[in-house]
Length: 538
Figure 1: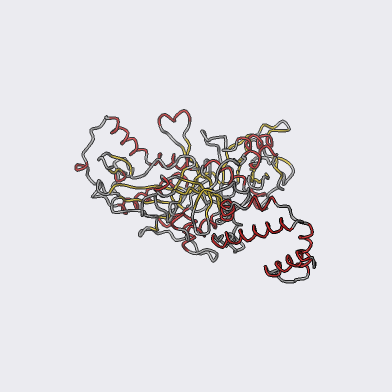
Figure 2: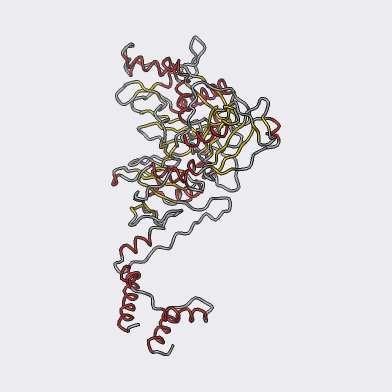
């Protein structure tokens, strides 16, 4: 090796050392969630929702999608975060400036809790008592849950979150029903439309001009407990005035769309200061848990799609096709461990039609034409549960059941399927068949490829979110992973250093020194080795 080339290498080392002294790199990100019951660290940021959803569905970890609304300087732009509940909570309570405008993305078709978004302008409704309205609404909804589903509940089963300001009354209600949840937020929306149908139709008639609009000053206040002559509860207390003095519902009916972004506990809207906190009149208390704090328990309870498959009754509210124009609806409760009659109008296709088609091939064979009665999607576990009709072959007993049908469960995360039963004997045995791999063409990792050209954002250890300077390495990452990448991009010496080939004699000398030293090799020792090499003494 020529001495001139070696001298150039030394200059490059000195130049890089000077650069890193002037521009220190933050410490590499190390996952802080060391508790064994929590998942490993995943933290990925995307500029668009679709690639975030695709990544979450192909990730082997227990992750979910959240929307982060950036400040007004960025035009209120939303970026999308994929991480676990535990990871989000860890940083959510630390980096309030970066994560203060955070929303849960409610995926299409996902099993979810019953939830309400309530608000009205205080100046336009000076005689309204928001707390009384909330209490009356909760009481009414609990009555309807018992009437249609046989579920007994009370205000103690409702997480009541408050984000009110002097100008606006604002609440979120999340019903934590005992071992029950709705099939998805579309069914939630239909249930709410049904139980509020009378007032919705009244408002529609007023807007169409069939009734004379009454001025705000002439609207009598109806006590919440008043009953109509036909025995139904008077819901006129739910009709409020907007800024223009027009009638509207206290309940926002527009929050039940697919992939809805629903603001989180302790988050504010962009440009606002009112975060959701536990309301003074809240009566819900999370069950004690040694592994989580009360604050974290409330946060987990507030997540709309944080619903486990085990033991859940799936509640539906369907619109029969022939009667849809008249607004007639039917409700039913499906329990995963019992046989339930079919409900007309239930959507037969899940968000994953390729998986649906594969399940049909499992139940249409040997001359038997089975079909999918209904499906449920548990996004927290990436689990599709199919109730099967007219196909009763049980892998437990090795023959068909006489009357009870089976379930096919597809684990999208592990890319396997297995069978369970509605049969009482199989349920007593807690039977679950062996897991069988899904065909490659229906695996999420095959169907949903991440867009490599999709530029990502990164968050450093100080909580700052910026555009990445180079494409991120595929796989799990965390806050701070992009710092060294940014530093390398700013350094103009990287390519020059990489273009220099390693000298074999130099490497051999370093390896021999390292073999003879038990502890970490110091810089001084390396310099001595280089000096010996140059003097020809090594």
